[in-house]
Image (cartoon, rainbow over the protein chains, first blue to last red):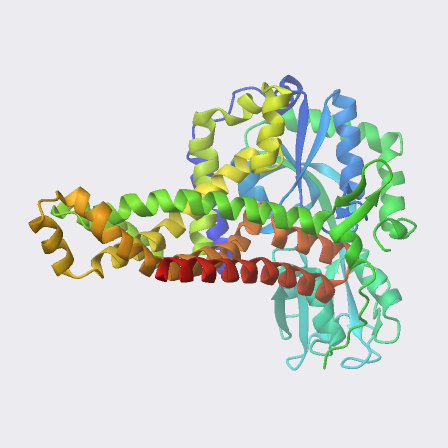
Length: 265
Length: 258
């Protein structure tokens, strides 16, 4: 993939600069008084409400982390393609953006413990692939499936559906449109989007399987070589798991759509 | 076949919204358009300076400056803008910007200067990104501007130079009084075209997270699910701005032709 090589190239440029301050990123954040958190628009992790404000699970998590550190929260909306190079270049301190832990990403950044558990799921078209009830039924040479480029759904599809043709789009909205137009049989992305799409377009789409086909761990990411920072963040995540904050926010954003009036007129 | 339920209702709110305290305020799409305009104007101004320097290098009598100018123009013209922007941005923002100490300066700036920065460049905390993108865009467009300037000057017949020199003018004076007034009229149409294409080219900066019209339109499209409505609106905004510029430049052309 062309863009991927480009991404790594830019990463190298960023790595070539002298090492960052020897202290932990947590010290930098406290000294500055501002937590700069990188994220990318991805419903319902991070999105814009009607007034243009950023809302979503990651915004709640970031705001609470900042509050607990006693600093200001500054979300930095970033294009997904450039989010890791931007972290390495020092444009922000941390990625709190629903980033799934993968071996490839672990080579350029350090991940904390998972603080949310999403999964790769899919929704199929009633028109082009009616009545299928398993993932394996989609592993056919004459089937085309769609996904957003750079997401964890891509390697999952490549591994589980080697016969099918995978077409990648810049955004989930375009992938969904391709499915609605009847040019693809299924769209693969993170939970809860497939379920939401099936509800919104019940006449055209259906869920062949109810549960996610592959669980994934989403974690915060910081620049490499900062064990103290990772330890501090892990402690915070553990504490917020115990007091139910993370589960509560996850329930609100992922397991229902009572938030929908905030984005839809 | 396009299977799509059109719904334009959410779009106007993302252009202008009603705020209880402040009345009508620009929402994401218009904010994005403002960023695009700011970025284009500053980049074009900077590109004009780069272009002039390179054009002078390229028309020098000595070999080395000519080679340097030529290498620059060919490098910039023959690489995709996306790659230049991406690599250039991360280089500028991680190597050059820390040397300038922009971040520290912003955090210590007075409210008055912050307001000034906000007016000229947009949100102060994103100034570093904005300047990086501006420099990279200007470097890129500067190569095209240089060629337009050089072509304009060289298109004036040698006879004009000879005549001016024969009247006892120096080279600089001849350039200023005889050559440039004629060359300028020929440069305006291609420069106008370049400026308009800069506005459209500037949409690649959405990749490096400058919150321009394209970046905001993407955010709105993803958040509302109104994909086509949002992108058609964004295209309409680009068209309005570029078309008005076309009309303005046509006027200028007519005046210069007189």
